[in-house]
Length: 241
Length: 309
Image (cartoon, rainbow over all chains, first blue to last red; front, side, top):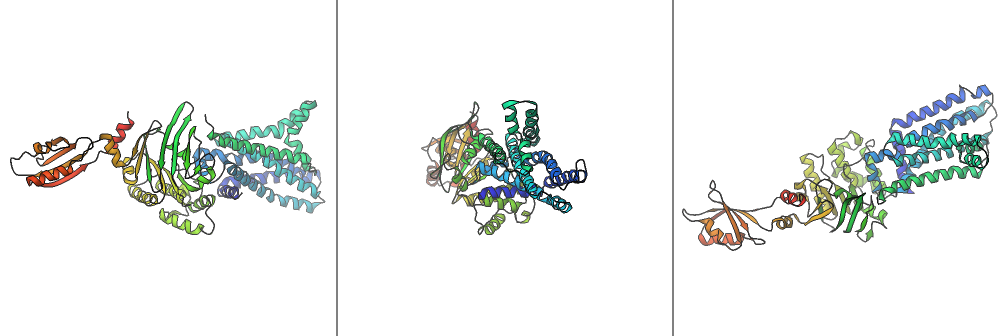
C-alpha cells in the first residue's frame, strides 16, 4: 500500500510539473463551463437549476481527456527504459499499475473539484436536486475509473504514446457509444447484453440519482479487468518466448 | 550476500542470449563482466535483478531464490541499467528521495542518507536541477546515486563509466573499489583497463557462454601459460650473456636486440618462474642486473583470443 502511494505521489507531481495537466484542466473546465453556461442546451436555455448539461458534457470531455492523460503512463517508461529501473526496485508489477491508476484518479478528482463552483452557482440560482448532483459526480468518478484503467492497459501494450492514445480511444468508444448505439438497433438478448455493456446506460442511470449496485459493479469490474490485463501485460516480459 | 548462478539460460525466440552459465560471486568481491556486444552480459544482469525471468536455471541471492523471493531480493540490490534511464523531468533530489522511499529508507534516516549520497557522488551543486538539464556525466552520477541510495548489499552496474571524463572515471572507479570492500559488486564493461583497474575477478562471456573466469593474473597465465620477463644486464666485454641465460632451467627462449645490447626478453617454459634463476646467475658471474620487469600479457590480447574463436 505504501509503495502504491509513493508511486502515485511521484506520478501526480509529474503531472503538475508538466504542462499537460494544466492544459487538460483548462480545456476540461473551459469546455464543460462553456456548454453548461453558454452554448446549446445550457442552464439558461432550459431554464432549470440543474447540473444535467454539465454531466452530459463532462461525459464526453472526460472520454477524450483521459486517454491523453494515461497514454504516457507506461508507454513512455517503456520507451525511455525507466520501466526497468522502476520494476527492479522493491515493488511489484501490480503496485506500479495501481500507483499510476491512483495518480490519474487524483488528477480527475482535482478537475472535478474545480467544477464544484458550477454546482454552487446553480444551486444559488434555483432549487437543485442535490442528491442527483452528488450521484452525477459519483458517476463521473466511476466512469473515469473505468476509462483510466482502459487507458493504462492500452499504454502497457505499446511503447508509443500516440498508439496508446488511439488504442484507448478506440476501446473506449465501444463502451462509450457504439454498444449503446447497436443495442438500440438490435433486439432480444443480444440487445440487452450490448445495453449492459454500454457505459452510457449505467452512467445515465446513476446521474438520474439512483445508485444501483449493478452500475457500480459494472464500472468496478471494467476497472479491475483492465488493470489486471495491464499487469499481465507488464509481467509478459517474463514469459518465455 | 553471495550470488550463486546455476545453469542459467535465457532464450529470445530461437536465439540463445545466455547459454547455461554458472558462477558464484562472494561478498567483498568485485566481479567484472566482460564480453563483446551482444554476448549476454546485460541479459544476465536483467535476470539477476529480477527484471526478466530466465528460461532455465536458478539464481540464489544469499538464501533467497529469484522466483520465490523477488521482492525481498530487489531490496538488497542497487542496479544501474544500461543507458542509465532516468526521469528527466524530475529534479535530482526529488528523484533520489523517490527511489529511497520506494526502497524502504525510513523517513528518519532520509535526510542524512540523501546528504551523504549527494556529496559522495559529487552532485551537490546540481541537486536542485532537473535531471534532463544535466550533462551525461552528471546523469551517470545520478544513476549511480540512485543505485547506492538504500545502501544495498549487492551492486549491479551495467557499464557504469560510459560518458564520463577521465577524472570522473577515476573517481567512480575509486568509489566502486571502496564499496566493493564490504559489498558484492558485479559490473559489466567492454573497456578493458577498467576491469584491470577495478575488478578482483573477471568473467569473460562470449555467445552466451563463459569462456574465462579468474583474476586478471590467472587469466594472463591461463592464456599463455608462460611468464615473460624483460631484463637488463651489464657485464664485461666478451661475455655471452644470452647463451648462459638460455642454458638456465625453465628458460625456453631468450630474445636479444642489437640496438640495446644489455636487453634480453626471457620466456619461460610453461608454468615455470625464471626470475630467481636469472638473479642467481647474475650473482654468480658478478653481472649487474639493472632491470627486471615481468611482462604481463595484455588483457586485450586474452580478450581477443577468447572471443574471436
